Amino acid sequence: MPYVPTQYEPVVPAAVDTGTVDSTTVLVVGAGPIGLACALDLGLRGHSIVLLSQNSRLTDGSRALCYARRPLEILDRLGLGERMVEKGVSWNIGRVFFRDKTDPVYSFDLSPVKDQKLPGMINIQQYYNEEYNIEALEALDNVDIRWGNKLTSLEEADDGIVATIETAKGDYEIQADWLIACDGSSSSIRNMLGLNFDGETFHDNFLIADVKFKKEYPTERHFWFDPPFNPAQSVLLHKQPDDVWRIDFQVGWDIDRDEIVKPENVTLRIQAMFGDDVEFEFEWISLYTFNCRQVDRMVQGRVVLAGDAAHIVSPFGARGANTGFQDTDNLAWKLDLIINGQANGSLLKSYDEERSPAARINILNSTRSTDFITPKSKISRQFRDAVLQLSSTHEFARGFVNSGRLSLPVPYLDSPLNSPDTDEWTGGVAPGTNCTDAPVMCGNKRSWLLNHLGWEFKVLIFSGAGQFTVEQQQELKSLANDDIPVSCIFVSEDALAGETVLTDVQGLAAERYGIGAGGGVYLIRPDQHVAARWRELDSGKIRDAVQRATGN
Amino acid sequence: MTQYLCRKPNLDDFDEVYQQIVDMHVGLSEEESQSANAKLIFTLANHIGDPDVIREAAEIARENTLQWRDEVS
Image (cartoon, rainbow over the protein chains, first blue to last red):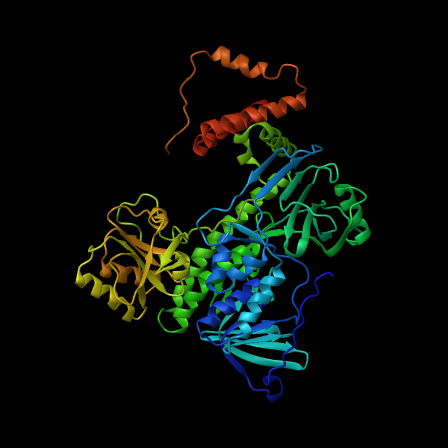
């Protein structure tokens, strides 16, 4: 049976009848993956949140299907990661086909990078992510999910916004200190604010068919360039949970949009691909075209844009939802400090300074994949085909083949929140970069480094025994009582009583953090990014770096 | 600006290399020659392994071509 989107009860708040102005601290608009993650991140921090969804059911179809490691790490911090990985499908073998050759021009193995908790990429239907997130939100008293509530107008003030919300039973007004627009690629809030959304429209269409086959196929990703069953175009096949396969046909610009999505016509395509006797049933059929666009600024006064509302990319390389999660990861801790009065509003500027360049690089990467997959000129097609031919016999050429790159996080190397290195470092994790995971022991339990980082500022201390004086240790302990508290994680034999101590049993944490014989100290932001690092322990420098990382 | 690309003569036997490049195309159709040229470029690019060198080489190739376009018109 095809998936039936989960229905929720439309909400009619009391304000509709009473006519009073409702209020909340943070109004999140849009209950897609990004709005949900944003509401959960801020909700778990205890803030009062109203989450609006203009629909009262989840999206149909698999949609955002591929989740890369960094977004999974973010979802894991929010408590959803393990469930996603358990349900999701991991694929390691990818095969690239060209023209009518039945053997792949080459194959690759993305075997899981060992010794990190989360895999490099999983496939899982968007609605599972949404369902898991909604369940977590429903457990929070401070989060109010309002299905069937549509924001129709917006007034901005210095200290917040007032929005008019439409429900099935009438309108009401709500005052919020902050508004986070996660209302998708055609964001109405972006339009209300009059923000530019410049970029490029790609004159191409892609047809998605999610199908269940009667017969088993190997869990591999197959990508065809110019195959006989879709001449001069591309086709992508990969697997989802529940034995569903996604087939993604490039179909060109000049098409009859109504005809092409008719099941009987999609069936012909699938038969051309797998043979006339192929047995399957449809889960979902969808036609999409895409744009690469970016808003000129992600923050305007008390309104913040995140996810597709702020930037949209081509689907190659799975950078849509994946980069959106990184927006809210970046935003939530900053807004938390601002709401709590621990940082001033100008800290939000760094959200734009860190995430806008990331969006630009995502657009660059996905545009490069698009240009390889759908060459725009004769010469670029000649180069593309030459690389594919060369890669069949020469491994060195395979690096040029771009059928979508794994989505990797963009580090904030130039962020004003970083304290630049003053010591010599070889390798390790540079300021502005997300922390790398490593296996550790916590007491006698197997654990992962990243599960001990995040939510607040942490100092990660690598040291040998007897390296720190008693005074230094007392100073460290006092960091926990600062306005912006900092707690300590020791990868050391020299820890303070009552602090978290991790044992680097395989030595991988020290290796990944560039720790030599002399030890090292990392200041880690609440979003698991490095703010600063030193070879020597100096609580004065830690305090300065915390101030800098919070815009104070 | 720092230059990474070697701009001095750097071959002992230019005639040999010239002939190698021309001979690569013997018996190929025009389209196959285009393909062989592209493959040669990618193979050398990988060997060079330095995007700055390739960028400078591409600039030389493009600018020289545009100069000749202007001279012809």
